Image (tube, rainbow, N blue to C red; front, side, top):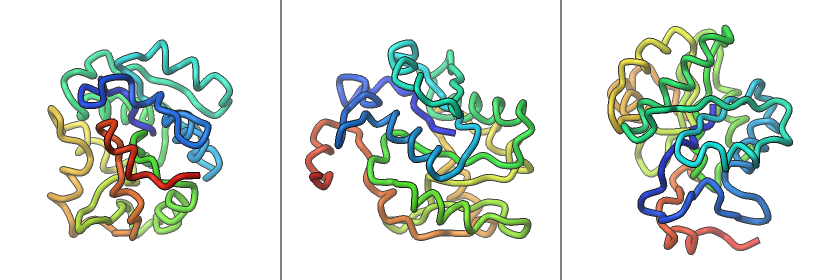
Length: 188
């Protein structure tokens, strides 16, 4: 599941549509998820949903879910995606943030590769913290649905480190929140 519902208040324009190396962030996230073999790929939209959805039309494996309450914070987007995954009887949900511009297919494959019957929560570890991308077995969906406000899955991961299998994903530390953040991305 790709969370791409935010209003991009600090960025000033829809950051989901910022083009980096020939594709925008939401397209890039969807492509990477598909190339990593994830299916279905649920993209949670909110602000600018109708505009962003157009850029996802070329992906057969992608479905969109609209968070009507996106302005209440990341938890509501997480709820939208988890409910969609549960409806589809998914065994797990991998949470990807569209603004993590350096997370690639290999990052996703490392996380998915660590997930099994004994390791039912696998999260990226970078900059000394646990965060997204993170993979949760379905038995943790109810916990994620209890999060509120601007608390995403990272809050749950940090509160429950003993449950988490950490995978080094240093590239997860880079996210795009302001136009200035684009300066920190490697050039093509």
